[in-house]
Length: 189
Ligand SMILES: *[C@@H]1O[C@H](CO)[C@@H](O)[C@H](O)[C@H]1NC(C)=O
Ligand SMILES: *[C@@H]1O[C@H](CO)[C@@H](O)[C@H](O)[C@H]1NC(C)=O
Ligand SMILES: *[C@@H]1O[C@H](CO)[C@@H](O)[C@H](O)[C@H]1NC(C)=O
Image (cartoon, rainbow, N blue to C red; front, side, top):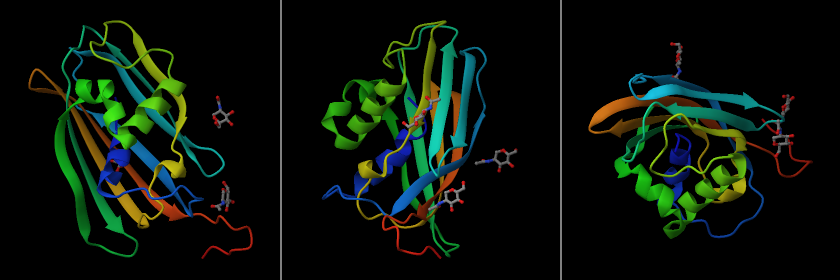
């Protein structure tokens, strides 16, 4: 249940053919959480950090009461390298509870949910219980989970969590897709 699942969902529009070494890396530079409804959240934090040219994420959510419906509004804007023109890759709304339960029906959501499971101590599923720390730590993205071709550039991801038709939080992340040498003799520009 968090913003970077969007980065994965962006690749729904592509198809991963083979899994070979990737010559790019996905970095998240910054995450801002705003519009946090303190009637619902005791705590909602997310931090990103870079270690060895890789982005890691820690996040913690504590709800004040049980949450059994979550609508997610997600949008992703992308700017190709050296281009000022914004591309809207998606702008969708979906049922967050359904995706957490049925990720196996979609390869990319499945990778996301598996990764989440590996890095969290509590299962992320509806209903979310009050006063439980839904936390994940040291979570990262593997290029292998992306299609072998993705364009280089910058992105901005918006995620809004809505329950009972009310906006409860907004997460904005910015990042980039940068070249990364897979061949030790190849020189980066
Ligand atoms: C990895 O990061 C280090 C410093 O954090 C930097 O010097 C190096 O150029 C980076 N390597 C690549 C391939 O980006
Ligand atoms: C985070 O994960 C990386 C790679 O999986 C590992 O090298 C590192 O030790 C982990 N850090 C922590 C604090 O668990
Ligand atoms: C996050 O907030 C800071 C301070 O308001 C702002 O400068 C920055 O552009 C924001 N980043 C994103 C990704 O929205």
